[in-house]
Image (tube, rainbow, N blue to C red):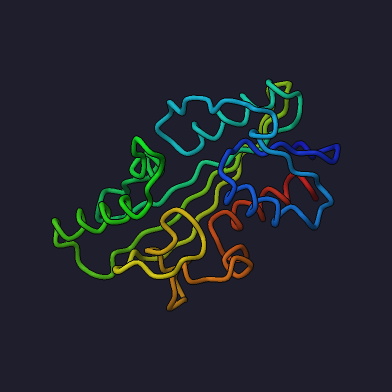
Length: 202
């Protein structure tokens, strides 16, 4: 497994919430985190049907464009009663002509579950696949997940995305009610990051 050399890592995202979360996770390693937005990089089209496929597109695009090692994440929520939807289309479900509306997306999930009379608990998981790519085309892949259930009504104003409707196993609060530092210790991204750190920063 290839180790990361150098002290700068490009995170291939325009999502500030995600960038902040990743910067927090990398802060102990003295890594300077820069984003795709810092280089005015466009967002490449995500044409794959898997988390790893889309993460690879983003990581390799950013690494080749900047000459820096680039980390990309593709993540989403899988709801078992919806045949693991929205999955890789998690962000797409929130798209509107005026930007992303995650309240609308969460309402859609709940409405679909109710239409199917899905029994409780409505099990779900957050998945995260990280791809660390180098400008020469090499990459390393790390996958993580957090099991839990979706709940209604939405609870909490912290976090981002579908956090207010996801209650992780072992907790009686949603990600949306959780302090960022607490969530970052247990999240699907933290799971994938622990594997990334062991593999590439160790």
